[in-house]
Length: 473
Image 1: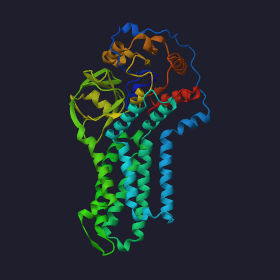
Image 2: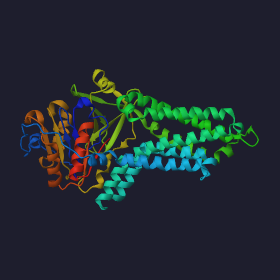
Image 3: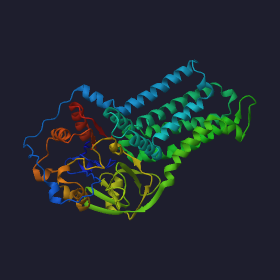
Image 4: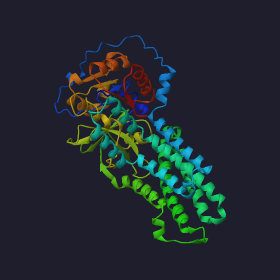
């Protein structure tokens, strides 16, 4: 198995939300990404740098032409397939309920709303995600057909499609519920109507704040609004559910009977939402961190204790409003430290340079990234059968001795190609390098991490060449 990572300019945020470790790693421009294997043998630095790859051509490579069919397949990825399936299924349900063909939602519309919202929260819960990865990695590693393992990786990577689809579907069902309540407003207490509308507005704001354009270009806005509105939504939902279940439409009076409320489906759905939203917050700790700034473009953060491969960490300076995700680099659970590589780009990473913290908030319960499924494949991180390709400019100077040492001390020359574009006078033909390594190494899959343009180019090239590949969106 092989794993490719393509890193472009650190200033463009290459290292924000990365998956580690990366057996075949491609880096580009002035940045790089390293992958640390679990090989216990230490190698000499000069051995690692050697490579038999010929110097790059002095001619600038022409832009790769890709068919609309290839781009269409990549656009309609598993994320969008899952999102489309979930939303379509719920749209059909809403239409059937509105036309009277399906009576259940008319009597239990709250269950349709909260059931969708519960699944949406579950898909983003670290504990549930780790459980899914553990089950898949334990039961299906190596012996199942390759197409099945690739499918497992793709679904786990794109659970966000279910998250988004269920969130939007819950909003649609809440609109249906509110329309139904207003139609029968004469038998419904005003407070129920008010808190229903409040909940509807809060969920709408939560959805808007998570629109890709907002999340990518105004990340702080996304973090604050999505989190605060999410908590406000849970609170207003509790009030809405308790009021709705306590109001007796037949007697037109309040019946705040706890036993009656507990027996309602709504109560258990909203309780599940609350529990899974709260669990990660119980794992928040302020921990010691050592900051290394090898260059103006990169910050290396060192934390105590080793980690397994394929995990990501969320860190925050305040502990409440904003959390930022970065891939973890570690030599394994046995190691003394694990590391985060942060490309200096936004306000948060710039603050690490201008005012390096000695302690920082983090969630001790880490969440799994797509490369956590590397154990599914026959040539994996835990054996000496992974390959690293790292393309970057002035690698040693940019990333400093810590990251360079981790690579040199853990990867032998037979497993790594380090391409310093500054020393070699330019970049290689990246797709040619991927194809040749994929074939010669007997690879089963390629993982790619880069900026948007780098991801797109390599995914198109791999798709065209029939090479299974994954990338963090």
